Image 1 (cartoon, helix red, strand yellow):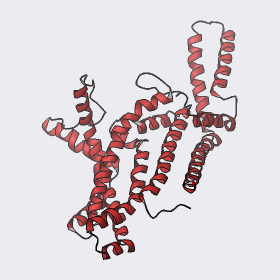
Image 2 (cartoon, one colour):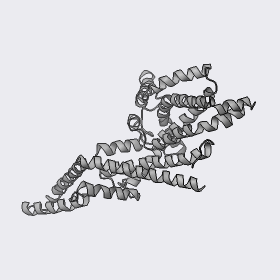
Image 3 (tube, one colour):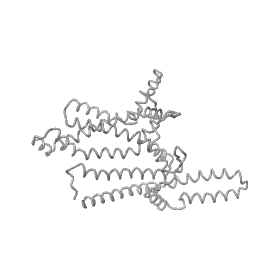
Image 4 (cartoon, helix red, strand yellow):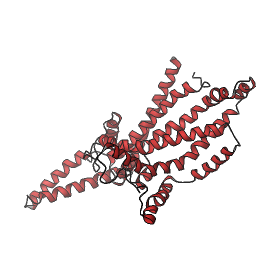
Length: 356
């Protein structure tokens, strides 16, 4: 027990070091390239120009006006951290992030008008969970179930069919599949027959329904095409990957020994094949769910879905440094937690793992 606790503590410390390392690497990229200073100077220039325009309506003396603007510029430069070099300013930002002080966005707002980054995440995260996390969970469970079946029936007709479909779906980009579905099932019926089978994008209709049940049905209607695209692209890879894992485990000596003892095939599959197959399957599933929190930037843009991917895209295009750092920290933190959960599950589900 002490050995297990020691191993998990070492894993946790290692993952925390990785988390800090990712943030410092991002700080070096933003700072050493001068991008951070350029972003802040651009923000400062815009704020000073706006302040000068407002103040010029009240102060007519050019000398007094310039003096007031210069004082305001110095105050804002200090507030933005431009009075300090990047290698002092950015580590302070990282320190605040490590204690979950995400700060404020300079350009973005939540749907209720808040510029707190935590509010931005609270606003967008449920939308991403509805779209990407739900899609990955449904697709992966169906794919794993099919993979377990065909992995125990190698060479069967279903195995050949799924293998062909897997190769086809693996070659399809998600954004391209989404565009094809929009053209075929949203715009096509509308142009040909004047019938709107599926909406081309958005999360709900404009204006959205006021009744809760009507709102939920409208949300599902808008969710249909993105989920369909996700299933088409990811189902094959899930099924084929699981199929290969199960097939490789079924060739192990301990499985052949269990069959030689005359154990029923159901017992062999559940105890000797399925359980040793779980670690890599769980790895794929949990890490995929963790990655889904960050959303799919291009896919959310294609379907005009207001999720975390769209938020990250907006932060990058607006060069909103606090949001970029905060989202990178949150996404990395989710990955670190997922990895630690996996380390614990490995010990539980795989009897071959022995920690020393």
